Structure formats: C-alpha cells, structure tokens
Image 1 (cartoon, one colour):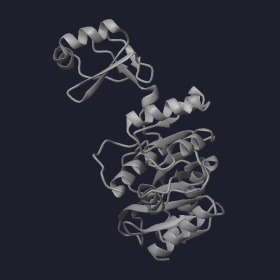
Image 2 (cartoon, one colour; image 1 turned 90 degrees about the vertical axis):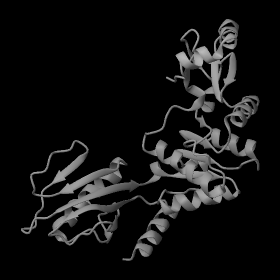
Image 3 (cartoon, helix red, strand yellow; image 1 turned 120 degrees about the vertical axis):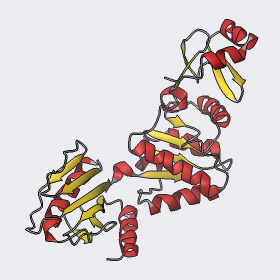
Image 4 (cartoon, one colour; image 1 turned 180 degrees about the vertical axis):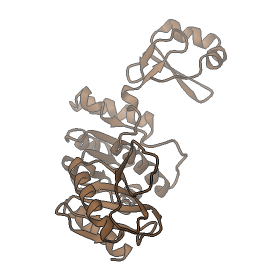
Amino acid sequence: MTPEQLHDLARDLNRRQEPYALITVVRAVAPTSAYLGAQAIVLPDGTLHGWIGGGCAKDVVIGAARQAIINGTPKLVRISNDQLQADSDVEQHSMSCASNGTIELFIQPYGPQSAICVLGDTPAADEARFLAERLRIRLVDSPDLAPIVLVATQGQGDEDALERALLSPADHVLMIASRKKADRLREIMRTRGVSAERLNCLVAPVGPDAGAKTPQEIAMVAIVGVMAYQRGRAELPASVQKFINPVCGMAIDIATAKHVETFNGVDYYFCCDGCLTTFRQDPAKYALSAPPRWR
C-alpha cells in the first residue's frame, strides 16, 4: 500500500467514524525488513494495512495497536533482544526472529475521543480542516460529536457558532480570536444564558503566540493548540488562569480581576484600587522586581 493509499484509507475511516491506529517506524536497526518512516494502519479486528516489517514483528504490533485503540492512548513500542536501557515510556517486547534486529514504533490511535469539529466558512477554517486531515485527526461535522471544537469564524457568525459550540457537550471550545474579542463574546454568551461552567471551556486565543498572519499560519497555530489539548499538554484556559498581583502577591483570576493595567506591552491584573494606584506610581519598579507570574 502506497503512502497515498494509506492516507486515503485513514481519511475514509475518519469519515465513517471508525477507530484505527496509525503505526510509524521511528527506528530500525539491521537486520530487519522494517525501514525508518514505514507506516501501517491497524483496525480493531487486527487487520493490518501497510508495512512495518515482517512476521517477526507483525503479531506484536497488531496486539499493541489493538490495545492502544481500546485505551485511546498513544505509545512507543520497542521490539528487540538487545540489552537496551529500560525506558518507562517505552513498551518493550522480545524479537522472535533468529536474526534479531531492533524496531521501534510509534502507535497513534484514532477514534471518537480524538475527533474535532471545525466551525466556520473562512479560509483559516478550510486550512485547519486540511491540516487536520493531513495529521489524520478525525473531523466531524457536529460539535455534539467531538470533545474539541475549533471555532474559526473570524467575524462571520461568531456569536451563533460560539453559542452552538458552548451548548454542546464538548470538553474544550477553542476559538481563533484575540483575548479582547473573546472577553466581549463571553459577555454576549452570558446574556444568552450560557453558564459560567461552560464559559470556562472557552480558550482564546488558541495555540502559541507565533505572530501568525496568513490563514495558513493562523490555522497551523490553531491545530497546534488542538493537539496540545488532545495530548494533555495544554495550559489552563485564560478564563481560569491565575495572575500573581505584583504589588501584594495575591493570585488573581484574570476573568474577574477588578483592574488591568498594561505596561511595556504586558497586562498586569489587580485585586483592588490600592494595588493599582501603587503600581501606577512606579510601574517599572514592580515590572522589574516582580516580573509577570502565573499559576
């Protein structure tokens, strides 16, 4: 099966919402018929499409892939008889072939738990869907079917799309928007009856601050944010993030901070009038002695 055929199979499985695991050879030490970058797809019934080495590794890989599909957790697998240092994050198996050799594989399961829904008819939304397909992230049409929703409306139906996402059971609602715009939309959502608990699911801006400008760049940053949430690597949403008041040291919920003051391009949050007044008298003192801290 060619890489293009494998990609087409993954896209078809995503469209049909059928679980599978993508296996990639990340290390191959001769003698072995596997090669670096070789890929295969394993289905829940154990059917293997593609190539990740001969029969010596096939049964082990299929078993590990089926378990990964059940657990929904990616894993690294090493098949070798060499006395290598044990790694806590690598699943070790013996090589059954007499010729020995070493193969290391990365197994990434895909299923309903890895699905995302992209809302929007903008260029950035289209690019995000394209990147998701290339990364074999399952795309679904309804926010009710995905644990993560990416709102990429960018001024075209923002309020309705965001309300739809927040009223869905999605665990995380990520939005391509500035913090200022997101705060305004939060207020609008409150007037529409969206609960504070659901508003805490909203994350905006999404992804790292990379200075993205074009739709392609914006979508790439957003998909990085999606992957961070899928893999448990994301920071707290801004709505529940705590900022350490540089004057009194109190942890401030930035969503409910009484005051915010910008100095040298950095936002500082305060709990009371007194702290704000003290900061304004000599902002450089507090900016230098107590750089911005988060909790």
